[in-house]
Image (cartoon, rainbow, N blue to C red; front, side, top):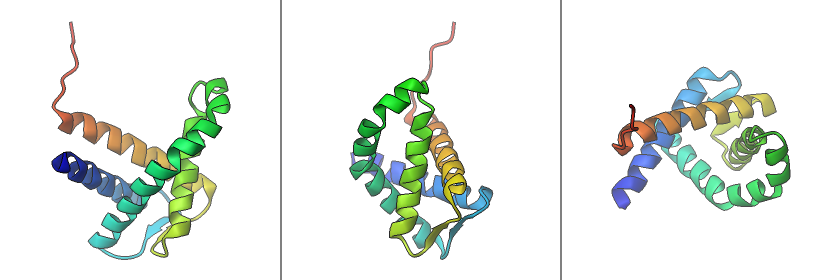
Length: 121
């Protein structure tokens, strides 16, 4: 279980680094350990506030067929930036794009590293 947690944390660190490298307006001030800290903080914000915000936003998420979930993820990135002096987001659109990049990278890498194969016929 600890290995799985460390793997997910590493994947999230990679995703935050990629978001900071690709998305204009997203900056992490520091080196490797700063990215690790930001990933840990984002994971905690996502674990604590994420379910509450998703529950509140559930009607909008259903109306938009799930697209509003991206807005919620952008809000979680913005909250993380507000809690960290070393993580800056240049506005909601940057937070939205960063959340999109983090979600995509995390999903792809977690699927590749999980070892589960999809059935193809």
